[in-house]
Amino acid sequence: MKQQLADALGALAKANLKLSVSYEREFSELIEEIAIRDSLSCGQVIKLPDVLAIINHPKLTAPQKIKKIKEVLMARRYPTAFSAHQDSSQGLGKLPKNFLREPGFKLSKIIVEKSVSDEPLTKKILTKFNNLPLEYVDEVKLKKAGFKPGELLIARQKGRFIKKCPCTPKHHSCNYYVLNLGIGCSFNCTYCFLHQYMNTPFMVYANTADLIKEVGQFSAKNPDKTFRLGSGEFIDSVDFDVLTGLNEVLIPALSQNKNILFEVKTKSSRIEHLLNLKHNGRVVVSWSLNTEAVIKRDEQAAAPLKERLRAAQMCQEAGYKIGFHFDPLIYYKDWKRDYRRVAEQLFEHVNPQNIVWISLGALRFNPSLKPIIKRKFPRSRLVYGELLPGSDGKLRYPKTIRQKMFAQLAGDIHSYSKKVPVYLCMESAELAKEVKATARF
Image (cartoon, rainbow, N blue to C red; front, top):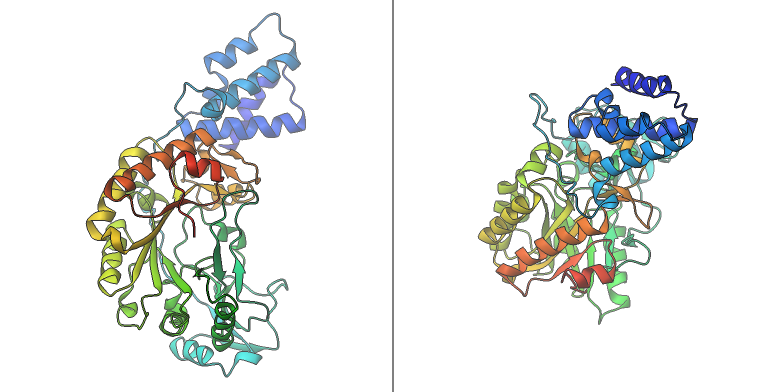
């Protein structure tokens, strides 16, 4: 690809189109992404009829040609943003052989902060992984160099465990709180923001009694208000149990707070250990859902769709409240048919009366994640969708695409039950109203 790109830029130079450093960077990215997404060579991109027409135009100056070629490439790369009459949905591409990612935490060493060496959780983890090299340190500081991926740090949470969900400024607030239990997920989904921390070891906060006390104090401050509190920001709440077994402690303890709905969010189907826990009807087990096509390509180490839904059915039968998160929604050729099928399967497994919420969120990520995805998952087509910077700086689909997807899926859900609360994640209140996903908490 590098040589193809160099040849394509060379062809422009031979046409007396000398690109500045900034233009060369922009042209390189546009040409490469169009080529990969549309299964073309870089040379074929430069030879597109509209591009050739500009190159061969006798009355345009070189700067005018460069400007117009950029406009053509931008329109090709981001058709929805540049034309209301084009459909930018693409297929996800064929899955290459031997592309399956191996699931599971791959631990190489355990490092324990001395202040938590006597904590029950520390002892439990050390007993479970007693064959791994072990080191004790005075203090764990992630910002310090020396820790490596694959190492498990067992440390004390010195700050607060609870924080408000980082909703997008000036967007619809979901009034959600997150509980920071540690860092780490073994599912390795293509789009996950944790790839930005790929040189970071796994981490577990072992002072569980402090966590339970903090939640109790948080609950007592506002006894007449119900709070949604979830543990799935930097971890998969069930997958993390492979390391810690924390839910066996947290579910019975946190569910004693009468104004807390504790959410355990996952893409796992390994929920057998949850089924006999005392949850007091105040625990929501929820699943992130996607289409089978997206799961096979971008969530391969997570449970298949049918297994997630069967696990939801089992938790429903165990008396848990159930939630779902269609996030991230991915825009591709057959998205409408495929997401409709997911909604259909959802209601085949779970009674709508037991669903406390369903959230919808479109693919979005910080621009700094894009080159990481390209490098780590070179066969993925995810970043070649029509993603442009939004008001929050994150790369997102244009509003017209998001609106279309949200309205379709909210309609599909409400066709089964109009009483299921549906809301948008990190979107404006105006858009939520337009697509009839206005549940408030």
